[in-house]
Amino acid sequence: MGERITLSVIKADIGGFVGHSSVHPRLLETAERYLAESKLLIDYRVAHVGDDIDLIMTHKYGVDCPEIHHLAWNVFLQCTEVARELKLYGAGQDLLSDAFSGNVKGMGPGVAEMEFEERKSEPIIVFAADKTEPGAWNLPLYKMFADPFNTIGLVIDPKMHQGFRFEVYDLIKNERVEFSLPEELYDLLVFIGAPGRYCIKSVYSKTTGEIAAVSSTQRLNLMAGRYVGKDDPVCIVRCQSGLPAVGEALEPFANPHLVAGWMRGSHIGPLMPVGLDQSAPTRFDGPPRVVAMGFQLSGGRLVGPQDFFGDVAFDKARQTANEIASYLRSLGPFEPHRLPLEDMEYTTMPEVMAKLKNRFVKVDHRDDREPAAEELGAK
Image 1: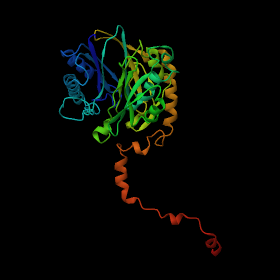
Image 2: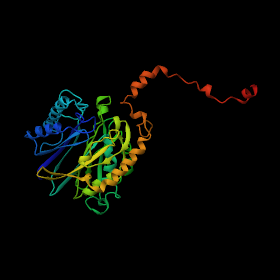
Image 3: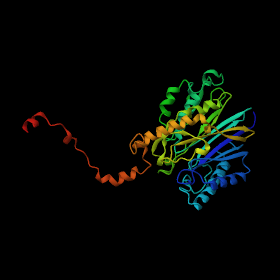
Image 4: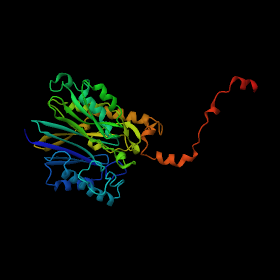
């Protein structure tokens, strides 16, 4: 076997500029400087989508490495200090603990990591989204790895024809389940069609057993017990040679799908594919955005990124997303633009209910009954 490489993408929102729209250049410079001083990494990139900082790192220490996670945690702490100095909005909001405990999972930041033996050619895409939740990847990952109308390789590539294994997390019960596709496709759809609870965590090739994709599945509201910000997930997809071609991995985003998040994390909106220079959400703090950064790995070195969604081929998708956004905004505080009540538990809804609890009175349905015929005659 050849040398195994670990690709770790760890993200956090530790202060927006201005509001929730972007990241101040000084925060990016701070992250760059801190990572450059580390002896742990083979290579790194610092990127952002909206107000989230994404640390893209390669190393040889495997997933869940305490030293790598601690490095990312310290980067976010350093950036938080700068954010507080600049009085940026929500400084440190994704850091839910005061002390590092060996792993950033459960502490606020989102994490997507995979370890693999680097192939002769290793193209990867790092997707990063803002103003949405981890379930936003369910539909795209399904289309990439299970839908032959999207990915023709499932039909004509012998290395893909056997299908893929999907690992799905239940974010409420903290449980996991695996599905083998295509034979369990319908069973999979029962669950991932409810992206607020069930999220695709990882995808594996049934031909090689190798990991093909991994996403972050952290939900900040479930960690903190209150609304502290949108989850803004990241996802890594390996491409080519028995895996979806780069174009097949990008194709699902050509038709914007609806995701939860947007303003205050409590609205439904279209996931708009944008170039890196268009990733600052503005309209109603949105619409939700996704960027796609392409890299070639060479001995763990990150060659790139290529800004895939900066292509004019996605102009129509952006136009469609804006049209969908205009229609949904016209609904204001009404569903289905606003999330249903069961998903509003971590917003101001509990406070409003508590304030009004003494004004709710029982309804006697006997008072609502239709008058009997003899009662009408008596009148």
